[in-house]
Length: 111
Length: 114
Image 1 (cartoon, rainbow over the protein chains, first blue to last red):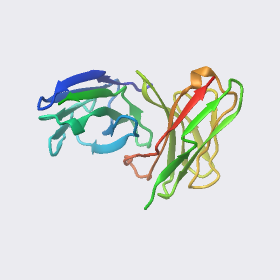
Image 2: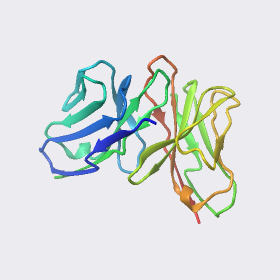
Image 3: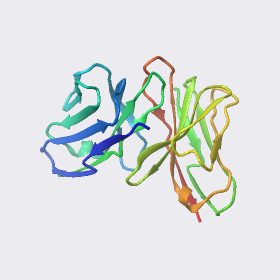
Image 4: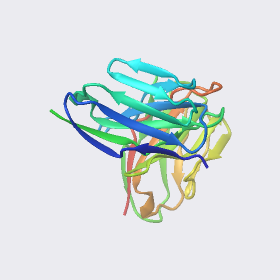
């Protein structure tokens, strides 16, 4: 079955440093979504990427979808303490609505 | 405002007991999902439903069942709770569209099986 791998599992940064998490799928994806989960909270949708090579930005967050639609990345510029949480990618393989989630990257930001 | 709720938020039960976790959404979404979250495993899909009377198994469905009798509710039943089912359980819903849309998650239920 489809597998989605995400690295790193943990990342500790100083406030102001950049952060990147990478997501790789064993199969070609129809689209990929990114979610953020604050400590003690539930996953919250950030963005969806659909097109090969697509790049989207949300303020300090930049999301990329690979040309082969098998990998994706999330980059945060100049992290802030409000960025703390676990970031998940989730891939959709076919036209159905089910997602396969990566293991997540837990981000800690030291002030 | 539309929302998705889960109850109970915390549950402690004994091995072998049947447990049902409730999920209720007022988004009027056709799709509903149950996930479990464990350290190092992210979110794993247990069961999902694309509409009333429709249920499907996810990647970790053994020991769990669901039923969908209306649009709003998808209860998750652990038929005979085991310690390996200690976890945080999230329910989610989404609107059906080709290509799929974002999933809205409930607040979660923390289940401990002793």
